Length: 140
Length: 140
DNA sequence: ACAAAATCAATAATAATTATCCTTTTTATT
DNA sequence: AATAAAAAGGATAATTATTATTGATTTTGT
Ligand SMILES: [Mn+2]
Ligand SMILES: [Mn+2]
Ligand SMILES: [Zn+2]
Ligand SMILES: [Zn+2]
Image (cartoon, rainbow over all chains, first blue to last red; front, side):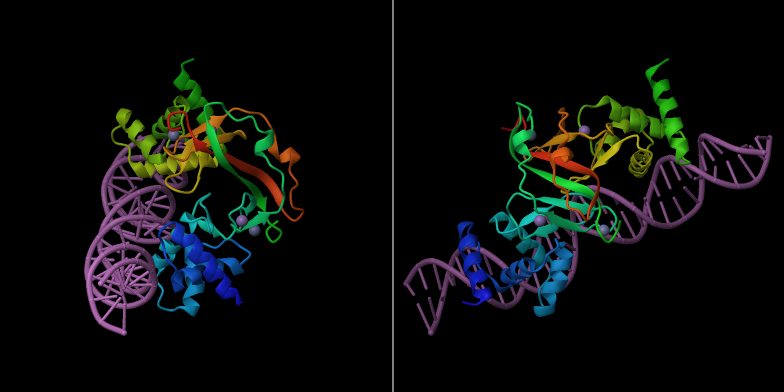
């Protein structure tokens, strides 16, 4: 079965759980995210998808990114200043964030930081995020 | 010596290092931040300072918060969605972030997470940011 | 006291995101 | 397959948070 068919099947299944349905635009957005190594902004996703689907609008990309986040197919990294970034991964993982060029990359380590952390009693932690700040290989 | 005089002396010293100077507005902004437990937005700082200094403008508050960040007197928490928040503390520390009401609180633990972390070789880490996500005592 | 530099307040502009409104597509029902 | 209802798309307006601009005012160094 072709790659794109696999994606369509996955999306249809997950979207239906939230009452959403499968559209070509959603497939295109998800497909693009699953092909890139970096963590693009909505604008970057829009420009890339637009090349194959010239009529798509920026608002649709925003709405679809949000829909994909809602049903757990992608995740949103709304950390620092500027535009939010989107990530094909939804598992717990950490990022490096270059303070010069802004690039965000996955850190592939498996340490579970919550394990060794003394969490305040009156707070119910459902997750956490860790970002390593500094300079990437190009910028140091 | 009065509290406000201590603040003025500290601000004057630090601001001069960056070629900035001491103004009543900067003192008021810093003074407010040093009195609150939470991490207010620029808007919240503006509204609070405005009560004692009715002519101050929102743009001035933004510029002064930025100036105070520049000379290391306060820090800025840009957690993504919504407005940035400002913090009187400048030392490395962690926060809890309530996903319901948005409140951000200090976590007073001393664990150094970087110590046990396997950092990628091609990245020069200068710092990191950890945020615990979940529900605060009021929202759980 | 005086000129230069810095900062002020007010407002305009920008960037990112969300809402609106009407049209088109998809899905469910006959 | 025809049809009605629901969801989503596209274009654009509106909103939110922040930054830039501008001319007036204050502060600083001499
Ligand atoms: Mn990632
Ligand atoms: Mn803090
Ligand atoms: Zn870089
Ligand atoms: Zn809360």
